[in-house]
Every structure is written in structure tokens, then in C-alpha cells.
Length: 177
Image 1 (cartoon, one colour):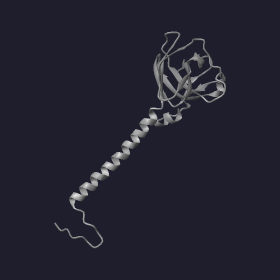
Image 2 (cartoon, helix red, strand yellow):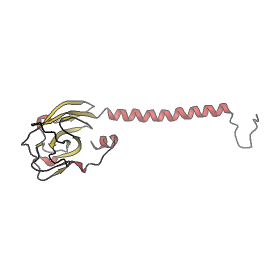
Image 3 (cartoon, one colour):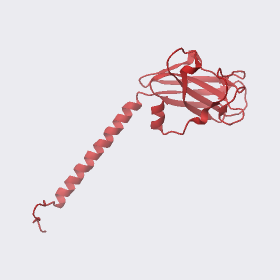
Image 4 (tube, rainbow, N blue to C red):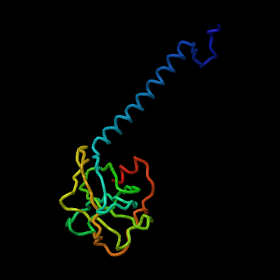
């Protein structure tokens, strides 16, 4: 093997090239693991909110559960709450959200005509002040049981289109919540 080099060019033996490759791989792996640790520490600050939802009767219709975040002001005022995520079920069942630090409430409705839009007259479960959830430091709230009353109605005038929300990645959902 010729170990002479051209003027101004270093000699790289296969051994040196192998070591450079190993060092490069380890440095890239370290960056990836650092990103994973950073993401994991952020995820640990998010809480999980979950439970079940049903109606007062036994008809199998779609149900939408909405996660609403308190934006400040009086808790009783509907304009102080913003829909930040939703969960669609074919009928009664379990639902779950991941959310960042804030105060949240839950709304739900029975979608009689299966169009994913609440229209006045459809059974609606409004925010229950006694079931507000405060998310901080990764806590969990998995025992929330929602029952949509047959005669329940929204305090808002008009329709509420839950499907205005774009499908999001988990990362985008966590940023939104």
C-alpha cells in the first residue's frame, strides 16, 4: 500500500477512516438521544384527561366530546372558553386527551344526524363547574364520567362545528393544547 500523500493532502488509512466513522456515528446518536430526552421532559409536563361518555338512553348514535380551555375571566361566561380538541365516538365509550398546563372543561353532544356539527336541539352536555380539570406537572384524570342529558342544550346560539379542526400530529396537538 502506498502511504505517500499528495502535497497538501493528509493520508487516511482504513483504520483512521473507521475511527472517524465511529466518532461521527456516536456524535449523531448523542444528538438524537438529546432530542428524545428533551421531548420526553416536555411530554411529562402534559396531563392526560380521560373517562367515559354515555347518554341517558340506549340509542347508538355518534358522540363528540370536546376539550375546552379556560382563557381567563369568569368561569360562567361561554366566551371565556375555547375548544382546543375533540374526540369522536361511534356511540357511548371511552375517550382521552393529552393537554398542556391550563384549566380545562369538557363538553359533549349526541350527534343525532351524524354530521359532526352540534345543532340546537341535539342533546348537549355543557361545562360542569364541579368537573373542571387543572393540568399541571403531568398529572392524570382518568375517572371522568360524562352523561349527556336528553334535554341538555348548549348556552350558545347556533351551531358548533367540531370538524373545523384540522387533523394534527401528536406534536401539533400538544402545542395547541
